[in-house]
Each structure stands twice: as structure tokens, then as C-alpha cells.
Image (cartoon, rainbow, N blue to C red; front, side):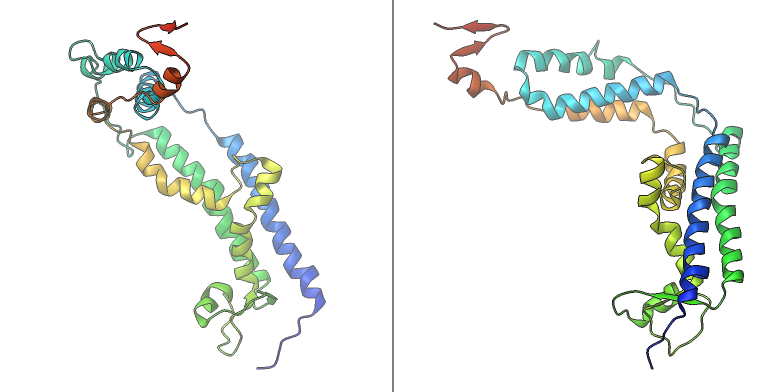
Length: 251
């Protein structure tokens, strides 16, 4: 097949408008999401438990940098058979039903309103307004398996798979403007469609908090089997310093 030559007007009236429309929709989505975003209620007890688990995990990973006596004191605070935090603290678990939680349903509806609906409406309008346009070509050869992804709306079997249709160009911009959004709006923005889709996929798992009692038991077992070995003992011995509850300098 002979090489295609595209009219330069396609760049001005098709390529750039799709990029501009997609970018502006992302900016508007970001500010609308911030406007509709409701303050999430923070459970003080859950935050406290997560911080305790984090402290215990840090002790397990970095406890080798403190003397054994200091390590055992901290370990006893968590794992003592009678007064240890992981032994005496028992939390009452009341799992929330996402089907009856009105706040969760409201957030889900807002997410669909600001994310899914604009993508469907703008994508359908672009597919209608710029239907059948071949607008650009990727600078490397591709196999025929890429034709359904890069040539939406164009049913030409003889067309090389490297050419990109207008509808596919829109979807490439939806997921390809992440760096521009991060540069203008910052890293934590609501304009990045790919990040929003990842949050929606992981939202169901994050909505149900784990049982803190099981987490305490697992952390207690992990901390209990840790064998402390002071990593800085040789350094202090080389400097003539011994540690027995306090630093003692030798002449």
C-alpha cells in the first residue's frame, strides 16, 4: 500500500482540538471533584492502632540499631504477657455494610458523575464530530494486533497498524496527559483518569478496614520471634565504649 500523506489542516482542526478538549476536561474535572468532595470522618481509634502497628514494625526492622536493653524495653511494651499492648487491648469490630452506608454510596455517585460521565459524553462527541479521521502515525512499526486499539472507528484492513484514528487519539490523550496534570495541578490531582480508575478498583478493598485484633496478633507473633543483635556493638567496642544500661568511657 502506498504511503499516506495527511493534510496539514488535520493537525490544526483535529489533532490539537482533541488534545485541548481532553486537557480542559481534565482541569475542570479536578476542580469539580474538589468542589464536590466531602470531608472524610477519621476514626481516632483506627488511626491510633495503625500508628502502634507502624511503631512495632519499625522496631522489628530497625531495632538492631539500638542496644539490647532498649530493644527489650520497647518489646515488653508491646508483647508483655500481662501488660503488653498487643495482649491487653481488644477492639470491638463492627464492619460497615457498603450497601447501607449513605456516605459511601454518595461518594460513589459523585465519582461516577465526575469521572465516568464526562469520559462517555466527550468520547462519544469526539467520535461523532471527528469520525473517520486518520490523524497521526506512531514512529515505529506495529503488528496487526494493535489495529483495534489504535484505529477505532476505521475499518480498513489494508491500513498499516501504525496509523492512529481520532477516537483512539482521544483515549491516548486521556491516559497520556498525566505529566501535564502533575506539572500544573500537582501530584495529588483529580484530573488523572488512570489514577482515578486505580482508586476505584482498590476502593472496595480499602472500604472494609481489617480486623485490628488479627493485626495485633500477627504483629505480636512477628515481634516475638525477632532475635536482637546490636549492629553497632563492634563500633562502640572499637572506640573503647561499653554499653551496660549507660555509656561508660574507658581511659
